[in-house]
Each structure stands twice: as structure tokens, then as C-alpha cells.
Length: 141
Image 1: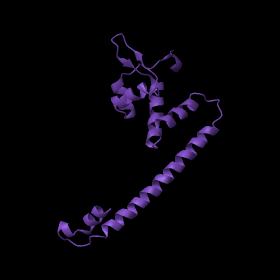
Image 2 (image 1 turned 90 degrees about the horizontal axis):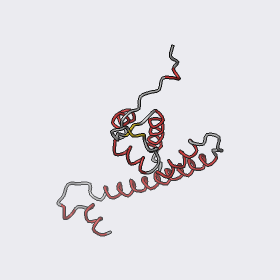
Image 3 (image 1 turned 30 degrees about the vertical axis):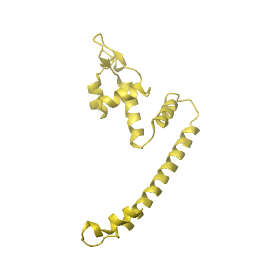
Image 4 (image 1 turned 180 degrees about the vertical axis):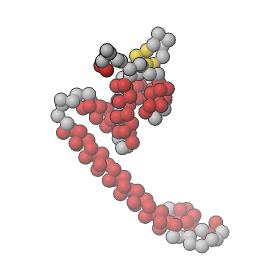
């Protein structure tokens, strides 16, 4: 009887990795070039061959990117993920800084919305462009 541990999964090519993770082929190659994703093995025909650890790592990277983390932040988090016995207080600090940056972006977006709302109120009726309050306000600034 063959045990589950002795069965090794078949390596997968970049197209299959793309399908499994939702990342484009270009994105996968970019993360390899940036050193976030380890170089894959190569077949005799020089095809890239990936394994389950590539799938897992790429999914980790993609989840970080959906949280709008920079590549440097992702690189830092991967460093901790690769060293599971390392103290993770810096991970907390990284997230705290990221949360603060998001809060600042929200404040800036709220301010932008307010400016746009005020601008929109400059022209409340249909008129000719020459008398449009929005265009005239934009031209004055």
C-alpha cells in the first residue's frame, strides 16, 4: 500500500499556477523577478515547473496585495513567514503603520469628496459652458 506521504504531486506549469491562484502569468514572472517568489524548477524543455509551495506562497503574496501592501511590506512579511520561530512584533508594527496609512488615505479621500461636492454645487442648472460655475471655478484656481 502506498502512503499519502510517498505520493508527490506533479509539478505544474505557469499557466496552471495562474489558473490556481488567479494571478496572471506576467504577475507571476514579476514576483519571481522581484525575489518574492522563488525561481521554479526547469524541465528539460526549459519550462518553468512549480509545486504546491509556489501556490501557497503566491496566494500569500496575492492576499497581501489585496490589502494594498507594498512589495517591501510583502517582502518583510514573507521574511517572517519563512522564519516561523522568529518573534513577530515587527509584523504588528508593520500592520499598525499600514492601518495608519490607510486612515490617512481615507481622510484625503473624504477631503477630496468635500471639494468635489462644493464644486458640483457651483452649477445647479443647465446652461451654456461659458457660464458654467464648475468650469469657471476650475479656471479661476
